[in-house]
Length: 254
Image (spheres, one colour):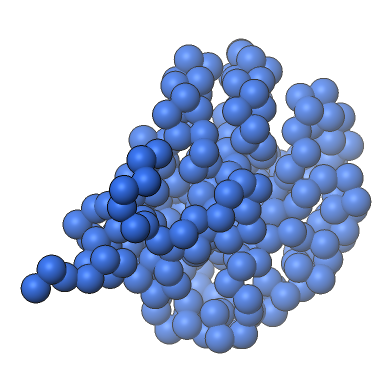
């Protein structure tokens, strides 16, 4: 990267803050290789969305492309939920080990895993993998009170989760967001008042959501469910290289 501009500092990888968590919605191996060629330095984790890894013929080759670029891979939490429901968590773990995957997501957004069962699953997996727990509902009508969000996040971290992902869906219209995609500011403020934001990843698939979090928490906010085609766009938002955040970081010539 050129160095003639005074840009906001960005920690180098592996980083704990300013994490960009990308959702692979079914990229080909060639597309994954292209993403790594142009943006590997800005990607901290790739999640193979939903259960897509299970039906991707060349999933091993694709994972190898990410690994070669020093980008870890995680399977979608929906797959973990289904494995739990079918009593196949051991089989899932064996497959993770075959694939060389060291990160796992534990969520309950589709399958209603009881809270205590979910915590036991985190505790079971945490000694073996880096666990990312997810809190929040995928159903826009199923609202959790702010105090419940806080407690569930605290419990997941205490059970061994490295970070907690705050639900927003790949469509950005549930969990922390209203059906129109606008942030539930009261909810988010309450969560941030009670918890360290460095332990949280906020799903923000839409540009205006990414801008909102950067304006409120700065370029070091951890953002998730970022689409592959938006990785470089998000990095420009973090650095004030796009109109939406330029004046926030660089002021106004006037």
